[in-house]
Amino acid sequence: MGRLKIAVLISGRGSNLSALINACKSESMPASIVAVISNRPDAAGLVRAQRAGLPITVIDHRQYRTRKAFEVDLDTAIRDYQANFVCNAGFMRILTEWFVRRWYDKHLNVHPSLLPAYPGLDTHKRAIKDGARITGCTVHFVRATLDTGPILIQAAVPVLQDDTPNSLADRVLATEHKIYPAAVRLLAEGRVSIINERVIIDDLNTPEEAFIINPDAGC
Ligand code: GRF
Image (cartoon, rainbow, N blue to C red):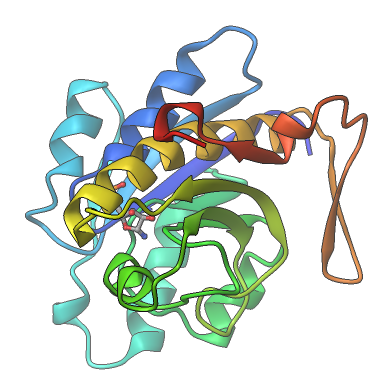
């Protein structure tokens, strides 16, 4: 694939974007972010991208009559930046099969649960309500069904007795910031293949490369 040239898709705060920006600053990371694209003009992540000197584009989904029309412009923008990989980082639009096919196996998402548990929204509230003892986060390849796709890295985060959805979200988010750059590094190093919809990582020397138990979260 050569050097990874990433378009990051955002909708909001952009803290995962910042984690990726920082990781790509390292000389040993064979990846760069070539563009940050938001579907919301007010996304705070756009400011982070600008501060980092990255090109930004807003493609406001509300200006489009159909999902397909929005996605055609999104796809065109990504290609105009000559990106060869897409990373969703808090991108809150459901993508159609058409877009997913365009970037098949070249498109990652980060999700705040241990998939396949808790796809969709309100993951932390649901985990607490269910009495789950462990939750976490997942970086996975994007497929047409929401929050499915081959899993690249996961991290476990304990649910504490006095956790609220917000306190749990904070610890899970801090862990997302570790696994997303780690996932991008594995890809950029050309060590990732997908066989029968399972991810195989070459030269997996330490379990930490595929599975992190967050030491800061009391595990
Ligand atoms: C993260 O928890 C991510 O997993 C979810 O949305 C949140 C985005 O946060 N999809 P940020 O915009 O990266 O700060």
